[in-house]
Length: 549
Image 1: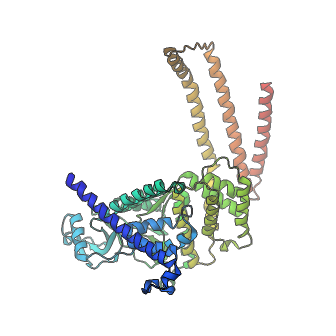
Image 2: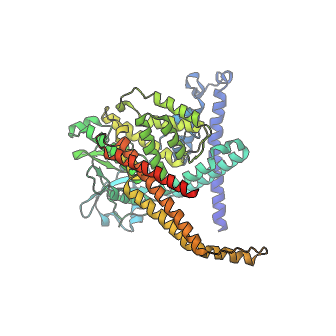
Image 3: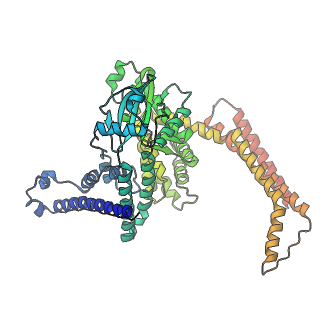
């Protein structure tokens, strides 16, 4: 144990010194570049006036030099406008997780170790030259004994220990920075590092990725437009993933797609609808749907790979997207402002009028554009920038959603310039809001509400007796005489009845109004239901008021 701690201490020390050396070197270069008189006297090409680098660029270079852990962290920061400036975000978006490939011999030895035997015992054929190399793992192509072509992903040796070491140092540096500069606590950098810790360790465990693939397969098992690779569980471990090989072309190869007879317009609409189904129906989505993780297959089928990073949404995030989309379609800044406050979990906002004015300015920039030209990704980003301006909290998971929407919109528009993502979103948003005010949802809410009231009435006598007993056992004695317990129960029953009736009438009014506004204009039934329900509400309210007198 002592030896292990000593080893860990020295590893941390050497890595810390390595990080410190990179930081000091780039800080010195930045300092020299900021002083023209000194820069002119430095003969190195690095300090040539034509090679002067700005601060964001210098930071990006330093992060790339620090290695894969810091690169991934920088990529996450690039999607956080609430934490860093726009100039730095643009520079960090250039970060590429480049990694020198490990030797194929070493990789094959690692694969055999995870399999518990020779590759010849499992595979009919095995291509011993790697297909691709990344910072965490390396991939190979093989054919199983049964004839299925597969992709094998093997994790680099000791990568988990290296990342753990970097994360310990990042956590230390974040806490030290906040302690040294308390004004930086507002950006909550310690929590950001903690969230990153959770994300990257999920990605390190290939069993998580296998589980994600299974879940997506179940979500789209009846959808012929989607292809998710099958997982071969008998060979998959924490460090080894064996999955079905997918053959297709990336969505940015338009020439190859045309040769295959692919309908690019159909693929654009299908791809957008698939991602939005993940987001708005299931609240579970592919967090990085860029061209390298998508393949267009025969018959306009879209294949997805690389499920290490996924996004999870709460119901209020999904509701926000629905309400925000409806606000765009109605061109209603008040609806947009309310939706943003709900996303931020704010019930009362003193600057509501200013927020509505800001959202009206955002809407005006798109007011006269055709629907197909509205960039929903940019519009969402502008809206989030407004929220950040007012120092409102945005859930960290939402920034992953923004990135996914912006990526899929770019992919769709590249395939079909006339494709309007906001129109596809409107279809999903309408369905979400219709379900919220549908009869099944109303009945479910009423069922739970009535159950709560019944439980209250049933449990009240026992709870009152328990309270009285506890008071009696204390130093203060309170004598409470309930002369007529039945009368109290009847009173609560009446209250429950009135609340239940009010909920029913309220849901009917809201549901009929929603259907009346957004439904078929020729259907008069919604209008009749709305009028009747409103009239009944007025009569019922009047009767209760008269009885109260």
